[in-house]
Amino acid sequence: MVRHNLGTVVSFEVTRTLKKKQFWLTTLLVPVAIGIVIALIVISNTTTGSRVDSQADATFAFTYSDASGLVDPAVATSFGGTRVTDDQQAIADVKAGRSAAHFAYPADPATQTTRAYGKDLDISGNGRYASVATAVLVTSAKAAIDNPTLTSLANGAFSVDAVTYKDGQATGGFLGAVAPLLFLLIFYVVIVMLGNQMLTSTLEEKENRVTEMILTTLNPTTLITGKIISLFIIGIVQMTVFVLPVLVGYLFFRSALSLPDIDFSQLVINPGQMIVGALLLIGGFTLFLGTLVAAGAIMPTAKEAGQVFGVMMTLIFVPLYAASLVVSDPHSFLVGLFTYFPYSAPVTALLRNGLGSLGPLEATIVIAELFIFGGIVLRIAVRLFRYGSVEYTKRIALRAVFARPAAERAPVR
Image (cartoon, rainbow, N blue to C red; front, side):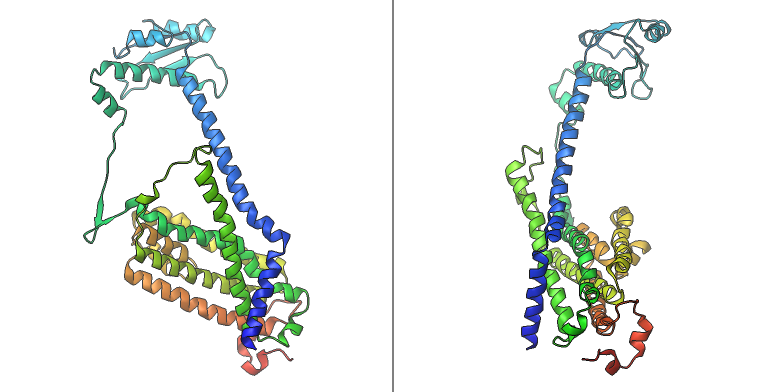
């Protein structure tokens, strides 16, 4: 009977959620929004790049003075420049509108500032003066180098293949961090998308005044367990909907979106890191899920429960402010505090695991901590729901719940 009831709860919760239009609107909103943002970024980058290129390639009549002797007269002439010796007169001509621009190259352009004076156009158009002044000097410098190899080296046209080692084994560097950091991304996406549903999973019955009727046929533990399992299933559905458009876009529209071509064969997957990442994800999800379900059992309405959701969201985003410290000094006191505090541990530990700074002992302690605290919070959530299921108008006092004998906590059936 218990298994039958559990299956009924899971089936009902999953079916009810998947039939809601709001669920699909919320689920599809994320990939659609990401797609729109990516498209806007690509368009913006293309437009900006074209504008910068056009400004660098722009030719217009200007004067210039060269105290360094590095500017090639032929190069300057090709850009539309005419050399002068009187800077003050050239600047006066620009001010009076008789000249479009004047560039004053100092004796040492590497340490001194090149001055560009021009007729005001607009915020975007004024950038052409610095672009052309730079292009003239760079092109002249390249022309002075007779060796094509040296020219390529000066432009940074060479590659460096760095190999790092840890415990005698080659590590993957950045590519080695990509796979385990996916668990951190999944954690954020699931909590943000499912968090509010976790919080209100026990509130709908209370607001509809049907919990007493439900608890006449179901054990509170069975009901809560069924809701938790259904949330896991719904989370998998949402992640599939979220990831599938991303994969399709990358595989079939990569060139159109100007996305980088990633060689997945170069990704380094460390089995140990992947196992630790999966356990941290499950443990962190269990802890936050239990906390939100418990909060929903305490609050009489979804509006009041929303305040708790805001606090929980703050807790998972606070560790990101210390992300730079996690990278530069992962064994500092603050990073250690974030690593072992239960509600900041999932994010901090997942980040450190991806970067390779979470040791085996630390990983074991954090994983055990998350599962232990998660189990305790889930038990508390069941107890709070058992006592608070019939409280429709006021918030449940925790002291009253834990002070009453166990026999009195169960609602009268």
